[in-house]
Length: 395
Image 1: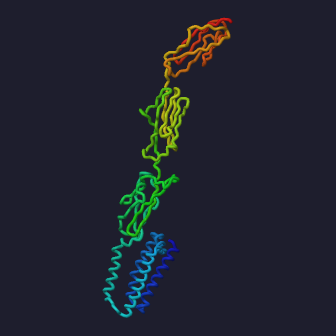
Image 2: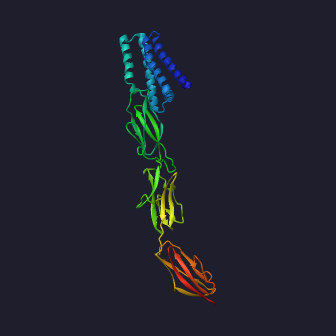
Image 3: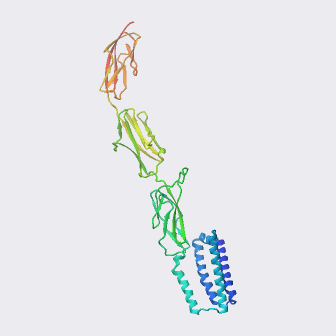
């Protein structure tokens, strides 16, 4: 318990009793004015009980009440006039008893006191001075909901409050106090994390505020899809291009697609290029037969797509020129060959069946005559081959 606050409250409470007593008993000229004691009792006993309750349940509210000062001129005037009327009524009550101007029967005094106390109890809900919420700050993921609970100070049986949001398009609230995060509120262009939205609960003169910050809805999982996609790997021919797209779940997740990164595990088999206009898409170009994985990464989440670039076998290969060529020792000759189909994924390989007579570069097909004789030069394209005869003579 805040002892400083308790001391401040007791000082003001006792000062109020003393001031009221002076205003009542000095004009009456006697402490035997029992109606004055009754007045002090019905004014200050409930005040004392309520003060203790607020001190325990809501010390900040009590501190605010003790230090409350009106700022508006009109309100200051109303408070001053009310205070003056109270002073006059207390003084006139004491003078009335002293000079016996107009005295009510004792039963009427007691009845009036009872009616005053009972009416205060019966209308307890009308004496609500504040509203308290179980939460004053809340963080909600977009699309989620949470129940706010309100109570009155002092406590009452009030269950229906007025709820409203300062910006319902971002945070909505139901009549029963259920708040829902609709979307993130960015107060300006430099606000990257989102700002809170105020939700209010009101009842008569009391009000409470809860600041609600909407958080991004994160990505739970992702996958890579394409037209005609299935559970099998993506199969392409060399040179073929396929557009793929990263799909995120849940579908309403908050995304910053500039943070999406595409890559491939084997550039020799396939390359991937991200779409500049829509970073969620990318184009895969098959380069050479083999297998690779296409990867899409977004933060700590990622998705893989298996890719197979299939081989296209050659059905035939033909060496250009005659079936037999004449060469002299020391001479070089460039051979060339073509295969069908033209898009077959094969590489030509050249070999000499008699390297003492003529040699050939495996990759280029350049034949070098070494000695007199006859040699067969062979070209291989995958599973098919062709030959040419080289006859070497002396210079």
